[in-house]
Every structure is written in C-alpha cells, then in structure tokens.
Image (cartoon, rainbow, N blue to C red; front, side, top):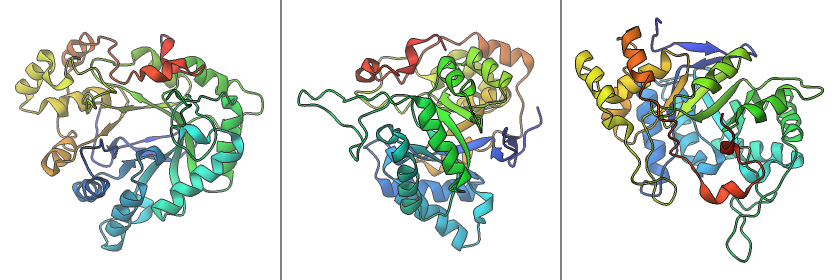
Length: 324
C-alpha cells in the first residue's frame, strides 16, 4: 500500500481525511499550554489532521496553536482537518448545536472538519461534564441516539461541521443509526481504541462493509492514566514480536505499530508531548511491512482494551459489553 505524508482516505461524503492524525488529549501531568505547543510542533512536522474534543478542555489552546500556524504561513485553514467531539452531557437534541458552537467559540474557527458523538454513553443533560449524585455516582441519561444523530445532521446542514461521525460505538449502536428511518447522512467514521493488542478486525470488517472509516486512538497503547487504566496491563511498545520486526526494519516500535494499522486501512491518531517523538511518529511513509510481518502482528492480538471505564458500565448505553 503506497502511503505518502499527504495520504488521505475519501470519506463517504466525499471529504478527505489525512491518514495520520495528531491526538491532543493531555493527562493532568501536562498543562493545556503544553497541548497547544505540541500541536504547533506537529503541524511543523507535517501533520494536517488534528484530533481534539470539548471533553479535553484544551480547545482554546489547540485553536490558538492552529491559528498561529495559519498566521505564520505554515498552513492554510483548508489544509487542516480538525476533529471535535460532542461531550456526553450534550446528547439531548436541543443541546447538540450548543455543544458544537461552544467548541467553535473556544477554537475561534468557523467550522469543524469533523464532528463526532464522543461516546454512546450519555450523562444528564446540562453544563456539568461529569454530573454525579449525592453518593458520587454518575448520573446517566438515555436519549435515543437516533435523535442525537438527527441533531448532528442539522449541524452539518448548517455548515458548522463538514462531516459527522461517531466514536466508541459498537456494531449494534452503529446499526441503530444506519437503519434509522429518514437517515440523511451515514457516519463517515467510527473512532475507537485500536492497537496490536486490540486490532478490531471484526469491527473493521463491518465498518468497511458500510463505507465507514475506522479511526484508531491509543494506537501505541495508552497513556496509562491511573484510575482509568490497569497499571499491570502489558505495554504495546514492549511487545517482543513488534520489537523484532522494528529491529529488522531499523524502525522504532511505534512506527511499526502505526504502520500495521495504516496498511489495514485504519486512520491512526498518534499522541506525544515530546518533539522528537512527534516527528518520529510521522515518519511512517517510507517503509512497508511485508505480508508475513502483518500476519505475525495479527497473532499478537489479545482483545485487550485499555480504556474500560468501570463506573460507566452502569450506563444502558455502555458499548463494550458487546463483542464488537
């Protein structure tokens, strides 16, 4: 598969999404300003796909970084593909556009290239991102996701988002939207956790059959945030098969882990706060994995999910009870 730094996939609505994106989620160990500075480094290194979310609470800084790179002539706005996401407290239809407009205001941009429902899990509608009751338990809500999707379609019609999609959906939840009466626009993508330990082969096959792009996050494993991630789980970048192939090709394990997904037609989001790694993670276009390498990495799959948010399992919409 010939891949170049400007390689993209054509979405089912005709828009183009760059194959390699830069993730901007920052754990508490980093400042929001560091997230912004990393975006500048990424754009200078060649990334044109920036993935963020209202939930990350750093769209002000990420927007400033993008606009600074437009102002200094590094890029034009139409060369940047920006993804934003609808937070879990804004899925009630009357709140969807409000959520999108808040992101646009924070970013100081006129439109999003892609707007995703961040998760099928929904919290009580309101301004609180993580509403809890008097016992500290999350307050869930159960809007019909198809009503949320209709409001997403209206945002696209209004020109506020050029493409719309979903994130963290399983097959059954995707089918709810795909089979809904009066569907105007199919989701262009489903953004999910995806790496050599969770290669998403079944979900990928389903998405391809529906002309939906699979976008992978945590492609190098996870940032292992305490309280969210099992600290004893194996590390992707330490896998012996991955390291053997990386050594053979004189590449970093991260580059091989990303290339594996790219060659399977998955759009990858890489995240780092280290300038050298940010640049290195974009250097995945001048080598190729053999069929044998791909098969060796296929076997590494453990169906291991890093992001299991245990308190969210009580939601009627929790997506990871299903097989895929």
